[in-house]
Image (cartoon, rainbow, N blue to C red; front, side, top):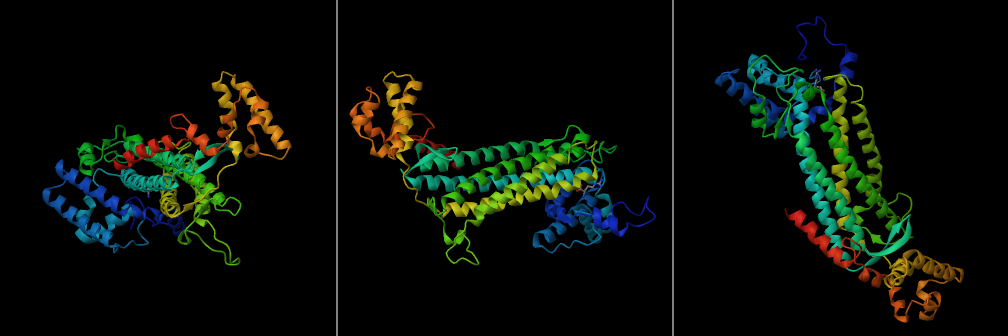
Length: 452
Ligand code: ARG
């Protein structure tokens, strides 16, 4: 029996209508649905819409259902239209006709918006915990990297010498902003729509502030139509998840490249790699590839949840039922990615070879700049030197002090020492730049952030 049948409808639902309109993906809202109902019933008791006795009986029934939900024994029936219907149906089995009072002053429109918000507040908290754990893994790896120097890349060409730790910590800062983003989103998620009813509120003396208070939510709706008709909170959650997946996907791409024979910068633990059914020598970074692949499907979720709102007339429309599986898919993808990739990075051993000496070209130019040479001129001097060496099939490593001075009389013999990637990192002065001092500061800042 549906929540709406029996009155206006003489006929039951067609088989095809049922198959098309029922969405079982909302079953994971079971525990938040019960939580919302308990708060609603408490409010109904407080304002006198339910007697003390009724409030107690309905609450007991709901608590029994919560017990079933927690133990996994709650049974959904094929005849339950959605999670809300299932709970009300079960309440009826437990407390009889009194269950009919649960929906007083409420619609599934404000109910589902509430459930979804409650679920996402919890999910955001869980993702923040996982993101912080991942940041901790990157900080640990940055410490293990010690003074190892790698090239930074622009256009996938070796650019400047930087500590490996600096590269790894770049990802830590990206993930920290993901944490900030989820925390910001919670401010807008943690608002109760309960009391908005179907769209315009109720003639009954409901107390939405008390409902929100009973739920421990930070805010309460200010416009009932907005409360039941808006899903920007869900889209914002998916955006947070998408950006985080994009960060993980970029890291994945690099890990995939770095574990290739050609790069050989990193070795992954057997426990976090997969083999080939055909080629006995293979050890593949499938986790990273799947993160990259799943990032694409999460972008699809973001596209879908935004498209879902376009042109949707006020207020609630059944279109919005499609929102949940998109958001769940995005969130599940991120949760899985953080776990698996986090384990893969935590157990990885990084062993990059030193960069070529070309990465010190900018340092050489800056030597001349310190002697008053305009940067553009210094750039040309070093550029001509590079070009001459390449023509002779030589590199900066083969450069002699005499050749340096021949290139420009303002060089002195000891400048040849600057043609060393390690020296280059030592000479780096910019706060937040690729120096060991900057790495130490970053680690300290991230550790303060993680301890809070
Ligand atoms: N299952 C529905 C959803 O997810 C619940 C709200 C139904 N409301 C309605 N008026 N039919 O959106």
